[in-house]
Structures are given as C-alpha cells and as structure tokens.
Length: 220
Image 1 (cartoon, rainbow, N blue to C red):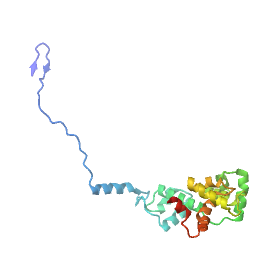
Image 2: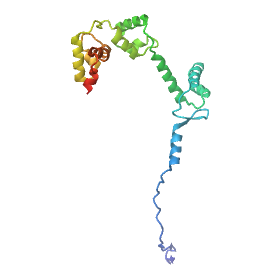
Image 3: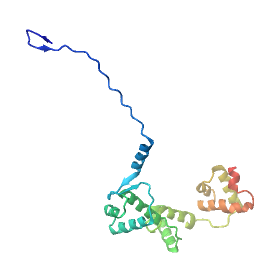
Image 4: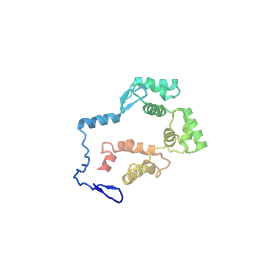
C-alpha cells in the first residue's frame, strides 16, 4: 500500500492472480426413459376434476351417452358437463359433441318426395346457395342438397338411354383428362357428373363382356 503525503489517499497496487474461466454449459442428452416420460406428459391432459387421461383416448359408448345427456341437461355448460366425464376436459368434450352433430347431419336416409319438393322450390328461390337451402331441410347438409339436385332431380337432366356416341366421348375424354366427371359431363347432352361416373364404371364395363375393364386398360 502506498500513502500520498499531500493528499492523504490510499492506493492499492493490483495483485495479479490466475483464475479459471467458466466452462460453457453442455446440455446432456436425455435418456430414452426421460424422453418417453416427456412424450407421455405432453399427450396427457387433466380436466377440472384432476383426472388425467391420454389425449388420444377413444370414447366409450357410455361416455358418448353421458356427453349428450349432460349437455342437454346443463344447456351446453361445459364446466358442469365435464364433472360427469372423468378424464375428459372441455376441449375434448366440445370437439366430440360437434362431431356427433356432424354425424347426425350426414344422415343417409332415403330422400322423401316432400324433401325433393322443398329442394326444388328452394332452388327456384335461392339458386345454387346450398347452405341456405339446407337450412330448410333438417338433417341434410349443403353437400347432400347439392348432390341430390345436381345428380338426381335437376329437371333438365337427361334420363334417356345412353348412345354409343356418348360412350365413345366418355372413353376419349377419360383417356385424355382422367376421371374429371364434371368436365366430361359438359361434353354430353345434360348428363350429370354422377351419371357419367356410373356409366363408366358399371355399364361400359359390362359392354366389354369379359374383356379387361377399360379403366385398367387405360392405366396400363
């Protein structure tokens, strides 16, 4: 230590000493067991009741029945619904319920004459606004409505016997462009895309009577 007699200040001479620099941290790779545990933790979800269930757990019939029952009972209050569905959270329940609704809408029951009448009248009023038309037909989706009109009950559809010329056009267009039935139908006289597809896969096949299916010939 050095003392300045004029200004009574103290100066400390530095001491030099060696020190070790900190080593960069190297992240250790997790073991297989730890990786499996991490994946399990990600896939698991906990509901309000504190019950843990795997994310991809299949729904049982009892769970589905309870989901519908308590949804109606509590008028869609999911916080109350999940109390009766151990291991399910709000997100799982709401998504499952929406899927059930979609399944109900996609009913494949036979179309009634009354439904066809409503569909025709609604088309006159709304045109190709299939969603609006479907609202007048409970249990039918906009896709079902569209397919029914375009392929079945459109008044301008040609339901006459198929001609050899039409068959040749279908084969030629298929060879050139593939199974684009809507485009092929435009080359014919008021035939729907569904009519064309069915004609190709079923009727034309029978016409060849024992020969290789035309579709397979083209593909080869």
